[in-house]
Length: 193
Image (cartoon, rainbow, N blue to C red; front, side):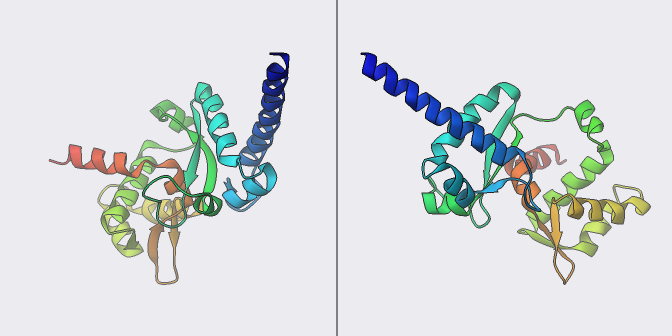
């Protein structure tokens, strides 16, 4: 009985140190993009890093935060393999939703958020890419003309969108990590008249 208790205690200490290290890696920005690639977590924490992240996620639940996994390529249909997880990026994000008051406190006006939602929904409806001119025309119907270009540049600068040399807009890392795209589309479709 005593040996079992010692093993459990050692295992808890083992995972406690790994959870602490994972928290440091996920919260502190070291690259241009926040978050950490799976291979970096494997290198720092070992091959059991998915288990460590699962435990960390359960601890973060009390703070309305979660560990989010974003796959650069297509999301695996079923349970991802360790190789697929190594290529993914992991972030700490909100578990719930921001209230309008909280959104205002982080520097976003409601019309800026609405413009972002419109832009993301439009790009999704165009199978993941849309010409910038089309997006700006759409936004001019909803926002003051002088704000449209500024807002699109802001969405790009903040990592919600990316733009290629042909002025095609795509969804970027922050949209994939912070926006529930299915819920957004469901919301748009449910309010359409």
